[in-house]
Image (spheres, helix red, strand yellow):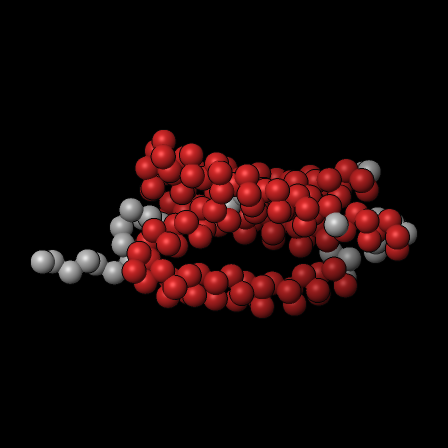
Length: 167
């Protein structure tokens, strides 16, 4: 609404597009992750979708910020959000697989990390948007999307968080 000059009514309607795309992406991502785990095993089954979808989300951010047509910008952001949410199945499935009997503790740590990202990111985005530095905000977001994909290379989903006792 601020930068693309949408009316209040139009911006309200368009604002529903990214969450709807995210809901679809989350469900589809769970199905894809399940199939990948069956085909490639847990380590690569959980990694593959985030390794692809997060850089795609970063690229969509960059495309959206430069889109000349405001409707294309909204479509790009909706697809970006869907690409991010494709990973929900991998995140939570990997947490349960790694955590095994301590799934709740592992999930709590993971969720805390996600919330800390929001606590840190919200003031930065608020400042950048207040200064009309949307390109900087989107470039930072794209960088974090690629970094989060790369982090999956260090996650050994096929190893439990706590070693099983020897009997």
